[in-house]
Length: 258
Image (cartoon, rainbow, N blue to C red; front, side):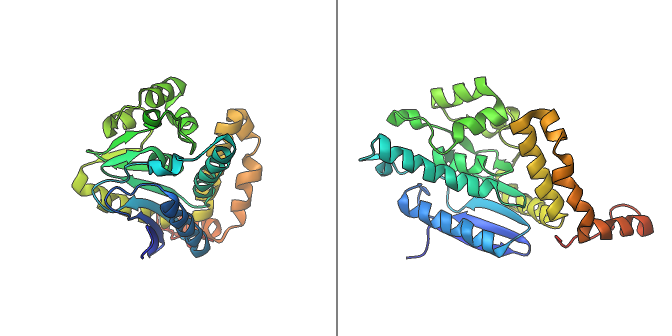
């Protein structure tokens, strides 16, 4: 049967699509297909990546069957594998954008939190609802909610197990943009194409600087500017853009990702 997750290409934009109706539930098979799609993206080297889903929902969350028969030892390895998927996404050296509609629960939200940015439809609803099975998020969702929304919001979000609308998630700085449902895909893809047309190596450096600031604080990130950004002076994109700026003014340069 066709894979539950597929990778495709739209120009310089790579697209990872969840497509396992009716709910795009994260089970063993979808997880394996997701890893394969991300590995295909890594090999394909797009200049931006979109994560999206087919159907009426982004995902209804985890297939609860994956929790049956787990114990502490197996559960630890299970969680490590899940977080590894998020790390694979976070470590990609190009901008990543999750495009969310409908329900976005548990593992699907945790996957989205591994993206650089999240855009959502006005009708989208978000939740880390693991409390319904006596669990706490195991794919890194809690700590990434802390990173975006702060510890108090993260506690409320996870402990309540409630669903929160897109407007609230934007206000909490969890997602970047809320758009009318019928405009989301078109505008998100236009934004992704714009990201992909930019200086890809500079975008990768920006990702590293943001991570340094989160992990090491502002002064710690300051100390790493040279390490992270100085090599950009040797890129084809910067050298060509400087020449274009001097000859034609700002905004005329085109970037090749080199």
